[in-house]
Amino acid sequence: MPAIVPVVPVEDPADPRLADYVGLKDPAARRGHPGAECGLFIAEGPLVLGRLLVSPYRLRSVLVTPQRLPGL
Image 1 (cartoon, rainbow, N blue to C red):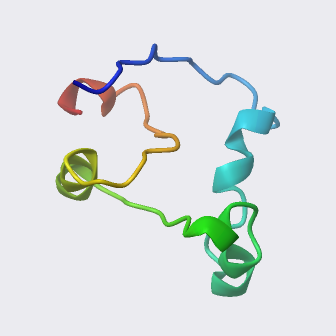
Image 2: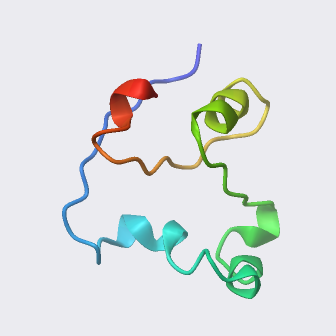
């Protein structure tokens, strides 16, 4: 069974834990993003995230609003 990690609220938009999510709208920025060399990709939405969780891929992080958290 996968490990369950605690939910850590982020209060500051400058929090370094958000670095993976900065500049993701630009495809060129995604290719040069730290972690891209090891196959970093972004999954959006509950259905895709659910499929990812049962896949062999390692989940690096999840960014979710408090309103959406119960549905995940």
